Image 1 (cartoon, helix red, strand yellow):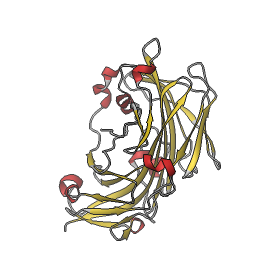
Image 2 (cartoon, rainbow, N blue to C red):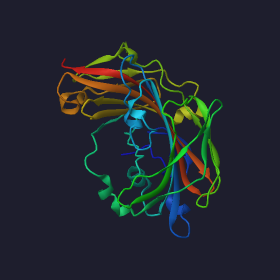
Image 3 (cartoon, one colour):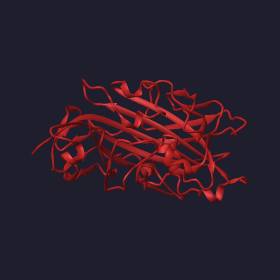
Amino acid sequence: MRPYGALSSTCLLLAGAALVGCSAPVAGDTADASGAITQGVVLVERAINLSRDATLTSSALEGEDAAPGAAAVAGSVTNVSAKFMRLSSATDPELAERLVGSPFDLPSAGSCMVLSPAAGDEATSLSSLGSIELLDAGDVTMKTDSTEMPLAARAFPDVGDLVFGVFYTSRDATSDLPAPARYAFESSGSGMLDRFAFEADAPAGPEEVRIGDVDLADGVELDAGVSAIVQWRADEDGGAGRARDIVYVDVTSARGTAVRCAFRDTGRGVIPGSLLDPSTLGPLPASATLAVHRTRQVPFSASGIDLGEVRFDLSVIGRARVVAR
């Protein structure tokens, strides 16, 4: 489920929901003579642990894209990754992203979904996609006013001969990733891809997050079966970008099941009490993490890339405990 529609004919912005009034080419219109298209996906992630004595765990940073050690570092954890995929024009870009480890599942704004730990190997069910080539783009660098970060090229793990090539990722999970800020990406080019350069504006990270009357940094207690009110400071200075932003909240239990709710960036959202119960989060009392994300999806165009998107995901994470009412 990905109604936020990245890489669809309608441009929305990052992670979930907010749409911006532009349009991107559909795959069938940009396929080359061989029937292949090139899709570029750049992820910029920053997660800040607000708990004073806890280890940061963010599912968004635990995949194969994350820099080494990203899932086990307390405090601020960051990750930048980039993949440039050549696929058949008949391939669903969303399924391709799932196969290469960059899926983005987000409910529509104002609704929720339950995410369960992955069961089994998706590669088998996605084998009908055919092979996906991850293209060498030469030297890839990300820059902001305060940061210059060369990305490391890494060989993609073998996925049953379905995916091959290289992807790019940051080398250090504690690198400075400012927000809000303008990000520039450039490559030296290669025999597979032309040299490119493009920019995208990152939103601010979530601030002044409260659950009911409690600051997220203090740890929160949620009553099972009772709706939880989440509040944050809306990005009033986001300009046109704000219209594209979505805020989503994950309540993730110790067993890995998560309740995910998405909201427009108005400063307030409600997690339904029907999802905060033992059938979803496990026996009570249940320990959980509660993460509030602001996400933005920015389409880009570059020579040799038919479908391009930069995805920003900035989050703050705290501890939660779900108890019987």
